[in-house]
Length: 147
Image: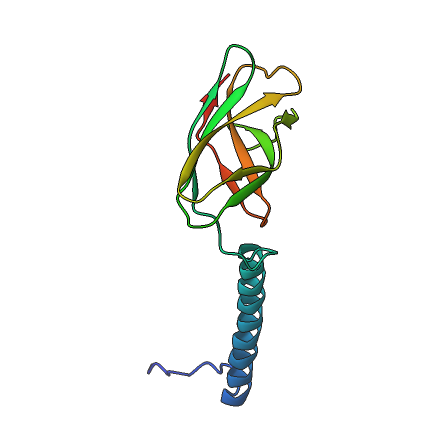
């Protein structure tokens, strides 16, 4: 008995439909990429047109009298004005302690200053860091210190 080979009938989509589906997928992917990039770029831009300050917080220390001392260097050619300080725990969560300092604190170009910050209440033991906000909308983070 001879074997008969039969071809199974398979349905497929036409080349025109396949091309349209590929075009739709490409357009949707392009729109999604545009949305992601535009949101990402908007988070990078500051509310100010000023360039970011060339400032480094060289050291941060917690003293026995409860104050935090930051040694800050302005390596730029323009004065930098700090308007506030915020204390964060090591994991990045705000510590919930108000920091008091003589604001605004101005640092001249190519100079170094020590800023003493007094917490409004006691700080529990742990690792922390401080961010200083500038008048141009940028912030600078200190090294981690132990309380």
